[in-house]
Length: 246
Image (cartoon, rainbow, N blue to C red):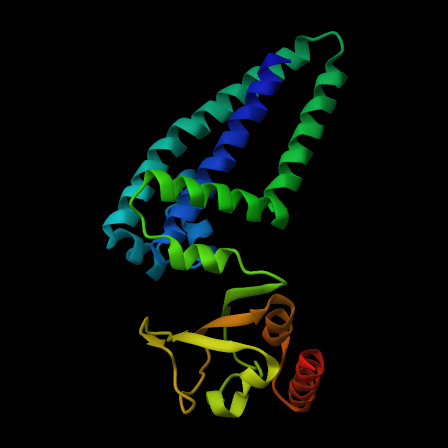
């Protein structure tokens, strides 16, 4: 029993460490998706080589966060493996081994549910942010306000692909504000960034848009394809937005 509980505790601490590190990376200006990816990569020692990784290495604060994650990851993974082996040996020798297996499955399931819960993530982010604000010198005001958006609104990245409805359109042609979606920035495929883009700026394949709006609307926009079906979806989104505003 002690070995199984130890394993669950170590896994919980590992999840918490990566969540705290991801928050720290977000507070340096990284998007939530990029921060989570880089935190998990560093903790597990995956070492993916991307433009984001270069941005981490070239940033002194991010570099310190990643270095600490790598150190903790080496210790944590070795501990998890050792504890898992000990748990298996102990369980195999136990008289009621099936009871211990059931406890392990239930514990792993609960951890999995908590790990993907948006409500838990939101509350945990608030606690972590308060901790950073109290015990560190990181400037967190703008990023925390982004993380605490209400009523389904969020700041999200969306990559443009061939065949997407937005591909090849200018911002004025896309008219996304009429759907309730704002384009905050455009990251080009060559790594350049267009902040506060103008109406005449074009959207191209492989661009990444930084969008603000309802998560459900942005998710639909991400699935919207070019052609008549895309135009119909655009018009329907405009109608829905103005009806909701009345």
